Length: 366
Image (cartoon, rainbow, N blue to C red; front, side):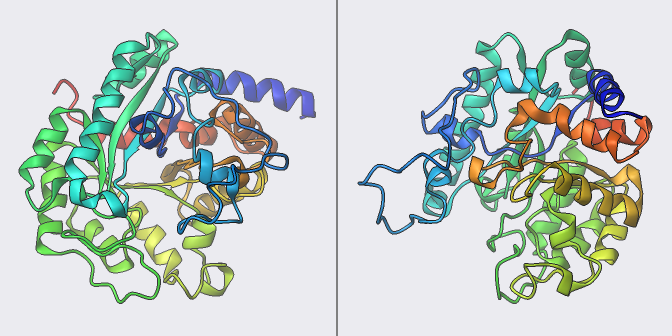
């Protein structure tokens, strides 16, 4: 296949695909009043932009990534970019930062409010509640947002709030981010972790009952494996690099030994036995070939039914070349075509695998 033929075939395949991305933090700057989802923002060239003087020197400022500190994921996720990139549905995470934990419920509800408002005010964007919604949006040439909690801190220790969040559209949730909470231990550096608490086990069971996809991203190894034992439904790992966090040998990962990246094959195989899948993220990949290599790592270990996309783009300084924002998703499809993957496999990676999980877990018609 010539390069021209590959590009033409990839474009046709991408138009056909239901494309799902399993992680974005765009609700954070929206709730902060910095951007709206209906507006595409152009971000300055990272090599030319200089931060305002008054920002430099603050306690939390990271001098290595000034543009990322200022803009985060602004300019990478928007409805115009979703439409240009052929995206059908974007998982939009609710994450509460450490300094906001005292008001975790209020902060999370602000982000939920804004996702609902964006759906109300943008004709081409809807809140996704069922798998049927996704297929309908594809037919209609629109896109949607899937509400997720990245850590159950907004629930506190009261699992009744899971039911309320479900009524507000919650369809995916992880027990933790990296930090320890009521439910489980996260993947903190150099912290001895203990897996799920009793409340965490109850939360997994309640999410199964409600029809909320359990996300095992940002949880320690013991909690990861315990969740797979408890869950009666397929789970997802929404956004991670499998090569870096699930290597076949720990020494192959740049994060070893700060993170426990051992038992990579065992954990991927456990995820596959559960029927779940791995959302490969774009963050910190050098280019599209790096993203494809991560996808191929999962395929090589557990097959093509257990991998999807979990972009987690967070600033141009961390974005892969050629895949800087969601308008460029077609280039990833072309990369997979050039690597010789079949149409069937590519359609699964782009969204078919996530749809299988969603159809299994979500209560369509609820």
